[in-house]
Length: 306
Image (cartoon, rainbow, N blue to C red; front, top):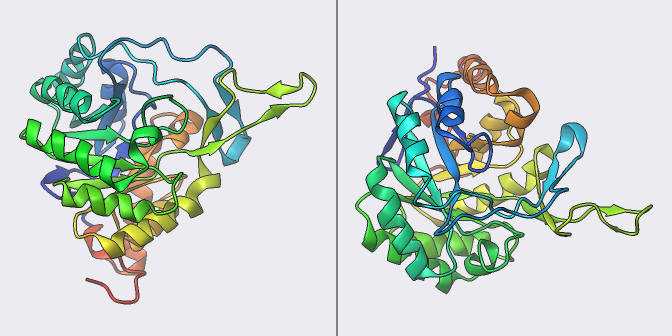
């Protein structure tokens, strides 16, 4: 059997499959459910300074097996309410990573100081949501902004900081370099790709907000390309995200340079049992290829491994 436990910088995970933010993370019970089903860690919903109702329906368009287009609008109960959900998940033994979003470095730092004492093992900074005005991609598309935000959070809290990088920019790897300069312990890549669907009968966008973010298998090549480029340009670990539905998908990300992966859309399609299935199948695939551990496969596809 291959060794499935991994280290992502200072973080120790029991396996490389992490529940992605915004999927199944509405409550402590749902986070705990993903953990009990076999996730290596769970990431909370992205939490802001105040409660947000999100956008009106419709907020999701399904494209069957190849993905989802969504514009939820970062709905969340706010930082004052959500820590009780983290407590529920932690009581069940879950390794919890807190996700936060803000409009500038000061807001991120304030949120980080409030989230850190809840017992989360790290903070993932949402610098990449493609459809929330004033947040996400709008504050995370320039290296200088990423460096300022990450730096402010790193100085504010004693726990590891993970910068979630947007693909909706000419140079995602440049953003990862900025996060590394600012002291990030790792980067995660990617978030959803900006997209649009049109209802031709109603002559308007399908989603109430209009623009949304595309996730699922359709974006895996883009996610892999970003991880590949980022791995070549930074020394801190990369967490791969985008279209991971099978152990083979995960192995591609590992070989591209990811130390772990986040799973989102596959959970909506197959339920939380997907975590146990992925871990079992990756174990068998690593054995078949002669890799003794997850770590031994990281970066294996690169011409010159570190």
